[in-house]
Amino acid sequence: MRELKAALFDLDGVVFDTEPQYTIFWGAQCREFHPEHPGLELEIKGSTLTQIYDKWFDGELAQFRSKITERLDAYEAQMDYIYIDGLEQFLKDLRSHGVKTAVVTSSNVPKMESVYRKHPEFKTLFDAVLTSEDFAESKPSPDCYLRAAQRFGAQTDECVVFEDSINGLRSGRAAAMYVVGLTTTNSKEAIESLSDCQIADYKNMDYNQLKELWQDI
Image (cartoon, rainbow, N blue to C red; front, side, top):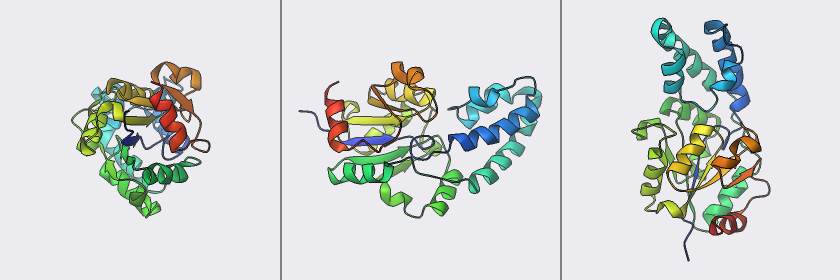
């Protein structure tokens, strides 16, 4: 019988309920630099900063990238990092059953330093934290999740990915891992085809339930 060895979590929208705050930030930037495109902040949800810059802040707008990055760093330093309901207990339950846990995020080290200041206990909840500096390619490439599996000496079919964004879900799929979709950013209907099951939070999730779902695949 296969062994469930690793649970791999994206950060925003999966560990923390931060997506509404990012919508506010990017809404302000998009209205300033792309007034011709109302609602752009909703379209770029789940994209990495590099992806946003490459698509929407290229050419003449490239000169404003450093300014926006400074604004983003300052914004993230004062954000409220609120755990998704039930997460902490779920993590403890997983680890009590020998499952390794990791954050696998496109966020960078400065962003994580802001997280650690708000939550000194954060590193004790996970066995590893992998950031954008650890990957050769961004999501939807499977690179980040494959590297996380290697970190724990696990095969892809021994890992479960928790994601909310379209790019993140595609990354987990491309890594050939079991994918749990969080409906914190997109609707259940929007992510059903990219995930094996969908949940709103972790209040009703534990190790036994996850293992049963995972073993059915």
